[in-house]
Length: 291
Image (cartoon, rainbow, N blue to C red; front, side, top):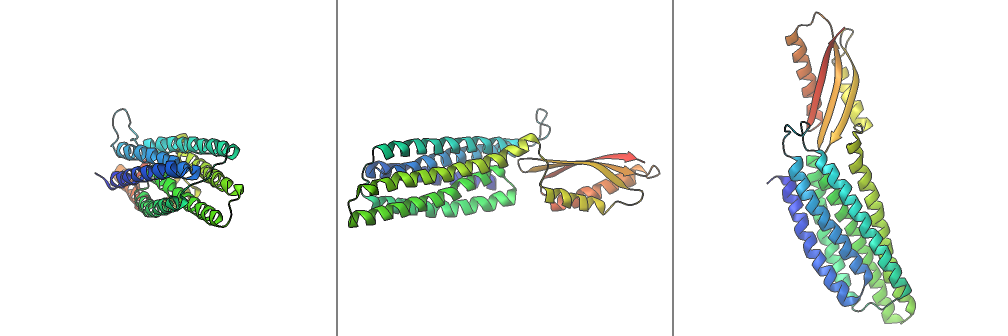
């Protein structure tokens, strides 16, 4: 089992535990904000499962049907995760609106505060680990999963603070206005989730359209090729794209007519090595042409 699949499995286990805790406390207390967090964690669990299978598939070597590999499975995974997050946010807003019309008292908010604190702590450490492995392996699926959990940290803390304010308010006053704190927090959580889904969708969807690598990466590639250019050596039609954690780079290299095949091949190998030293999982295709 690779590092990517191992950390994706940890995310599945942690989310499963948190869902059970949040659902039990949410039903017991009647807090829609806690139940909204349970739905958020359910979406995180689905995202973790999708990420687990997508990173396994994306690492499968290229074959006859997929000559460019399976890297885009990670991007498809990210798009699906973004859609799931959007649905979760829509459901939370709907339920919160319903509770605004029929406000009810939240019982035993202390238990909710404890569960939200535990949730934030667990997700903080798991998301940090996910981000670390995502950066090391350049995995968009793991980065998406880490983004889910990072948002869950903030939303869990927000719910905990809201429940704390509600508990303090209940001790001081029995005002009906306190009942509106819970759905207000839930809507705030939903808005954060909507923002998360947009960021994730944009990041995951762009490579599916074969969008070029970031400008700074393209400029770095140009600088590496320029080192070997001269009055008799030049290049044109540089193209780049990304699929999962794989970068595809191709360009035309103009060489003098009197350069033999062995020298041309050696120069191409040197350029490829320089690029691969700077960019992990780079697939480079150089089209050699003569002046």
